[in-house]
Length: 477
Ligand code: LLP
Figure 1 (cartoon, rainbow, N blue to C red):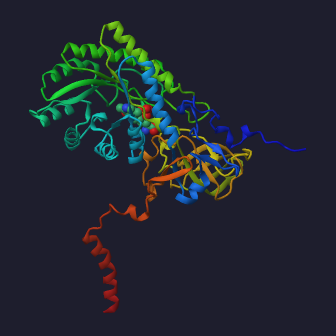
Figure 2 (figure 1 turned 90 degrees about the horizontal axis):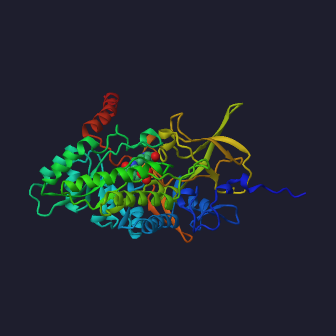
């Protein structure tokens, strides 16, 4: 009798449906191009994942161009479909800011949200137009504000200190600088407390009680043109109601601001739509999220008799999260009898700090054994000197051997951007894949790169040297 394998009990279970044109990428665990080759290997963007690892090394971030572009288009088209006024999706580049990603989203006609001079510089170098860049942050330095003004991007002013610094900096500038004001909307949503930002006890934005005084002050500044209001309520959110409520709150403040004569033409509702990291996650589609936000703003405007503002949204995670996988190579294993088996990979908390920071749960598959039965449950450990460096606590996998290629799904957002050199581990390379081609977008760090910023003062060099030479000296005397 021929034994048939139940493919739903193999790594294939995470593959997207064959017909991907209607898939909302944030609901797909793997990039929309993921397939299995005749060699039983995972393919992404038409590239064989184990081959990519051979060519570019391990660990490796693999970014699927088709998924990223499809997601950009879904946001753009959903806004056009559901919002009766002008709109713009801007990519919250904190999710993954690098030249190639900024270039793709710019080509897809999205704007870019940046939060530091570094992100701003990268966006500009990638070709983003300054008036499509929105500069956020609760403690921009004077140098960052000067830089933002000099490039002509939109500045999202967060607090009184920033507002006054900007006014002093601008003096009697010829043309008013376009700003938005960030408000704390007082909306709570269900997500990890570290990534909630819209509740009142938040470090971001002006409190509702301060807002009218802020409007009054800004209306008297000839150097500032307050063209919009901004709020962001949190990240990895699965409910749509908080964003519907946000629409109403923002239109309320838009109406108030116009009473102070402010030329508010934009409402920026932030980002926050969640993605699927495991089968248990059930985020709304991009279309449903955009529809909720659009209808909330349009309805509130109609009720209050306010002209429709330009609607801006700032997706980060849901724009890039599902477009990337991380490939690792399996190394050592350790079985603690009756407790667990640890399978160690060649990366961990330095390339993906989310499990240790937020207890985030990921799914894994074996790129060179896509049809092998998932026969064991193991803990995937990272390589760092920290017991908590665990990539996945409990992963169903086939029997693994050193050299197998383990893939973690949905690592596009807040992985590379939060990566570190903990334990002096070099950051991995990243490639973009599409139509069977792979291009390097981030070079792998070398151990020489790691000491590039280190300084060894001559005095220390001398001392190290002189210890030796003292010994030499003593011996030779
Ligand atoms: N706009 C603003 C002002 C933000 O602060 C954020 C995210 C976004 C947009 C994009 O939110 P998203 O669409 O990605 O949910 N490191 C955390 C996430 C921090 C989110 C910070 N702000 C994580 O790994 O889960």
